[in-house]
Image 1 (tube, rainbow, N blue to C red):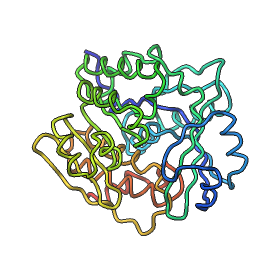
Image 2: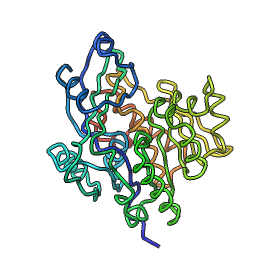
Image 3: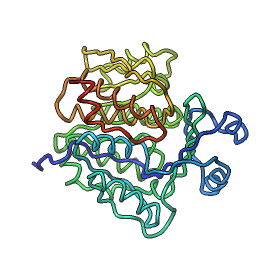
Image 4: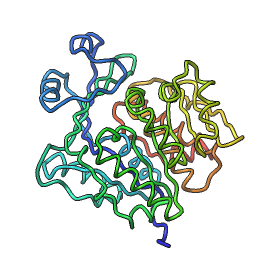
Length: 330
């Protein structure tokens, strides 16, 4: 059996984030659904970028943010994603490898440019994401290396990447390889609009391939087409081995079989930008899980990491997460 050398390997979109503050009127003018993620083409991305207020640019993507968070905590990570051999692709690769993340996926020599996400943050800290997937949607099963998957305790899949057929095949290949080698598979549902598009596929994937499920309240109620969280909670029980369900200021609920934990949200003096909250919750949780910690401790780590990232602009931690965890958890 291949030796475990990594805690988590993530598979997701390789995206450069552009984050800018805006007023609600800007969203209305551009007909953007507040708080949601919208897929746009290259022409729309260019037009919106030119009209956006000045912003902050950094490497992003949901699963990439999670992997970066785990690496910041001291976890050993790998990442599988597609970039183009352009400037943004080089920036993304440098950002990940500088964190110590193994990133072996070859860059595309032709085709669409490296992906970018234009994120608009309103004064209430809600983020509205407009994503041009570019090269990232051309990830395929050939990019999934068995040795890399076999070396990781957990393979983490990003629901946002479920749209392209080749990416679906890559996900299923990765999940099969992980289980072949006795490893675990985790899935983030990513967005309620994403769930609406792929509900049947996600339900099948969760039942057959997923050991650890991440979802927020809107996503889990959408998945099971119910109106309230408690109903969704009963339905997810037994559907997957572990479910970590976030509820914003209400904290999170972590369950596994008959085990259930309600974890308080971390106290934050001011919420600046909710971008990356779910990603960093998953980072803290998966880091703890990779270390064999109890589920309630994993949930606390998730809450602390999420609390840090919503206290500033951007989806990557600014504080030293190791020190923060030590001070909060002892």
